[in-house]
Image 1 (cartoon, helix red, strand yellow):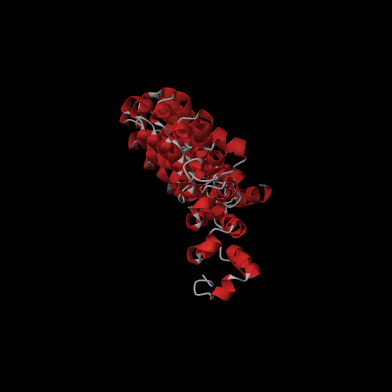
Image 2 (tube, rainbow, N blue to C red; image 1 turned 60 degrees about the vertical axis):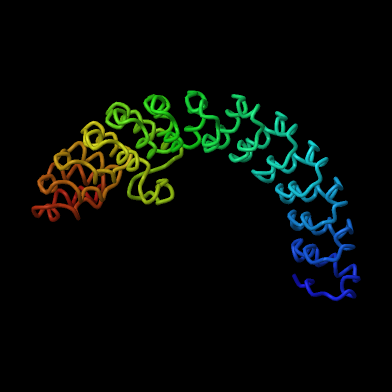
Length: 353
């Protein structure tokens, strides 16, 4: 603080002190003489700039409703420095919990069991559930309100709520990875797993092993992924941007989903056919025999032309197949084998498509 070593004359300069209270974001009060820390106008300027400055205000101003209200509006945690009566003031506490996740911990016990205050807090911050009075932490409506807004509040709910299907579904629909917090019985529930995978394809890895092997669940998840992409206008062909493909850690959602499934499930022809229909790039995860499968490869090429490079040499040397590939991807001839890149029929077809 520039005022840390100020002379008495500087502290007596009111305009300078008021300007410093704002410019120094409240840190001025930590070094101010008692009369300045008791000056309401200066303290108001300080807490408006930095709510934490309330810590250094005179005790009389920590009991001043206007000062405390301004402080908690800027930083809810400054409720910790307010006098006990204001920590029991409903309006002050509501303003605090709207700004800071842990503010509820400083509220009076009565307000920690006040439904409106509690619902406001848990809807804004997942950690707020930690400071709810034990009576309301057992209230299902409070728990549902928390996880519907902040799925990871599930980490803080009483354990018996983890077995509640409605609570579980509310959480996984917001954050699929919360599936890992659920007991085995719910990680074996197809509907809950599908809801989780719809939000986060990689959450399939938290499902019980039989579901990771379940071809039909994987097909349903891929269908759901295709619908999600369609509703978002996401394209997965060669022209789609990285952002548009909603890639996760360098992988597309479809690829993440496939890799989360068991090896047996993701090598199934029907699964791979559906997967490349959504994202042609996942052909790279197909078993070798499917790289010789015309239908599978052409479906992939239609979505991502460069996946043709993965096709078997036999296919890329097959004129009928390459003609179909050219119809789907103008650059297909660059992957041709056996001299087909110079075939007049294919070159003519390329000009047409």
